[in-house]
Length: 476
Image (cartoon, rainbow, N blue to C red; front, side, top):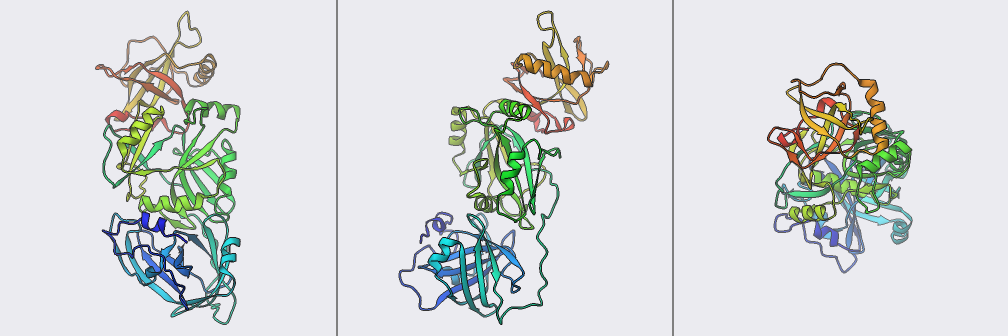
């Protein structure tokens, strides 16, 4: 048994938690403890002495005394035996920050071979505590998720009503958005992730059904049906809400927005779901839980999933190194997040995005043609400022011939005789209602406020035109 993970997660100069030292001799009477952890999200921790350490499970709702009630128990890192006596405050900014209280403690008996039980995912034990007595079983459902169930005996309490199956605490949620920044934050209060180039998707699993929603509320469950199937296999019957990005990786292993769009059109099943946040688990709202704890829960429930589901790994500190590596690998950029940030459904500076090159969404407001390019020569784009549509320039590169035909087909449905801009411009164009959003890569803005060296990347269907404002000045 190893306490390496336990020690890695803790700074013992700041927390009074005991250092991870494995006990060399086996106790005659095996200890157990159930600690109530008053963190941002309150929960119970069940710990059983075994081979010189405490096997540990986070049990959000605690152990039930009713055999008909199954409770989720997420296996976490092993703890030192001395942790059975720990009570106190884990300081803010540390892993597991909050108040730890002993709910119950005592000895326990292994009613079956624990070594074999750990291998087979089935542990039976008898608790002899001050509050809890009797037989329980822990049944493994997947990599780190178990169910803890009371076994019927003379200590069974029938007065507890059978709990209904837990449900997600919300059916829709505004997503957390990152603010564009040119500065990379420093210090251990920040973690850094890759910025992926795809569709922001929130996954809701309830019972055995899964729904995928874009940030503007569109249902993408049918388009990404293979992702639905993969998400449905996570954590068996436990409900949860995930936040992440559906992407397509190119031959270099880089997420490619244009390739994603091609795969959507051709129904090519080359999709991956990169998950970076967990908003709810087993009926519990986790949005007020510090990010670093949400990611720990997320990592646990995603272990053992198929290769379509990818956990978004992170590093703490070293933001500049991450950014330089992202540029070297030709990635879109990185995202910096405060490790203790809560999940609020808006844009703030707890999450920052630092791009390797300039790129954002603009609204297509018209298009032009020439003798040489009779189908499509360039599109005209704009953005909203104070509810007024502002001209941002022409975009004449980045289109394949097939894309030109596809765009013009879409344009025919939204043609208008009126220029949609707040201030008219002296350009002869075919005007369009502001319905379509284009992703544009560009070098900079000129002094006249127009895009310099813009190139078309693709259409975006996962966002609303009304939300398209200029990022460089603190927008969308």
